[in-house]
Image (cartoon, rainbow, N blue to C red):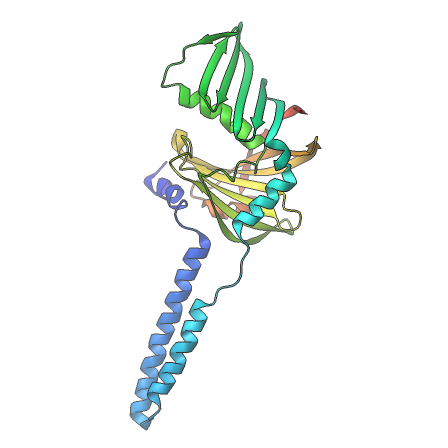
Amino acid sequence: MTKVDKFKIVSAKYFDINTLNIVILHIKILTFFSEFINRIKLFSQKFKITTMKKLISALALIVILISCKQETQPIAQDIIDKSIEVTGGNIIKSSTISFDFRNKHYTAIRNDGMYQYERRFTDSVRKIKDVLSNDGFKRFVNNELVEVADSMIPRYSSSVNSVHYFSVLPYGLNDTAVHKTYLEEVTIKEKKYHKIKVTFSEDGGGKDFEDVFVYWINSENSKTEYIAYSYLTDGGGMRFREAYNERYVNGIRFVDYKNYKPINKDAYLFDLDRLFENNELKLLSKIENKNIVVE
């Protein structure tokens, strides 16, 4: 990954489309205002207009009103709240969810802020159980607690957490370390979507707090149907996920994902929806959770 690529990924955390558009608009207005004033001055010198100050004052008032006027746009927090609600957030927060993903069995036990995420699999002849909870990470081999090297704990913790995290999105986006910014309303496959940027604080944001996410939430039914993110680990990159195979299990919405990456390595995170529409993304894999049970 080049320095330019890294800069694009990191800069996406601090800048968004609306901010840049507003700055550009104000610069254009001020430039126009300055040029117009100069023209009025030349005109007044030639024709000796005595009401120059009144004209300038009136024009200044108009420019201020134009520059301060902003279109009323939806609030990101309200959109996320509604999307979590239609996903079954009130059920998720106090539930036990289990499923199979890529030859491993996962169980998530949540109880109003307390959580225990488990992963079970067989490695050669050993039965391994990883447990991530409010108390930290533990590994059991053949039902016995074993010591894990400090350098490996973040890696194991992240791999367990990420599977559980994606399985119930957008649940989890109201954590205190999460920051949401409304970008714009866009159209994908003739449907309207709210486009929202999500970033994380270093404090409480986990090992990959510098990752940047974009959520496309259906404007009509409030369901999260597309997700994109940039990451810095393992050389960095971007992914775009398309939800499919929607089903509800005991009131909780679950989806699988088609996992894409941009064909052009210089792609911009916030352009991935457009690239998807133009068939400029490559399908890498499918994210499928099977045998889901909710208690």
